[in-house]
Length: 125
Image (cartoon, rainbow, N blue to C red; front, side, top):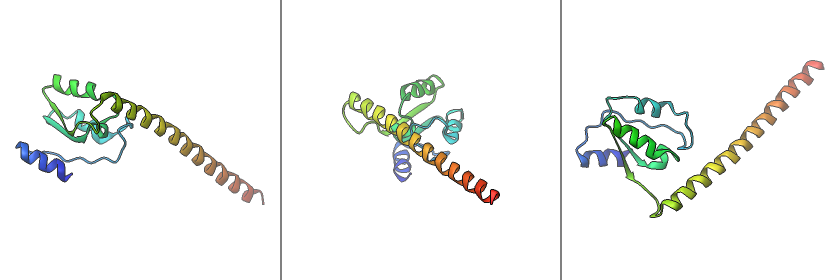
C-alpha cells in the first residue's frame, strides 16, 4: 500500500479510499472491487499490477471506466516486455488455479465424507 500512497502523492492525487482485498485476479467474486467499480465518486482507480485487478478482461474494465469519465492507473503495467508472454502466464495461472482448486475441493469433500461416516458409525454403536 505504501508504494501506492507514494505514487498518489507524487502525482498530486487526493486519496479518498484505500482498499485491500485478499483475492486472486482470477476470482470474479470480489465484493470490495465491485464496490469500487460501481462507485461513481472514485475518479481514478490505482493498482500496482494489472493482474492483481484481473487476469483477463483488463482492457474491458479500463474502457468502461474511461467511458464513465474515470481512469485506471497501473504502477507496474507488465512484468515482461511481451504481451504474448503476459497472456501465456495468465493462461497458465488460470489453468493451475483450476487444477489446484479442483484438487482442494476433492480433498475437502473426502474429509467431509469421512467425518459424516465417522458420525454415522458412532451413532450406530
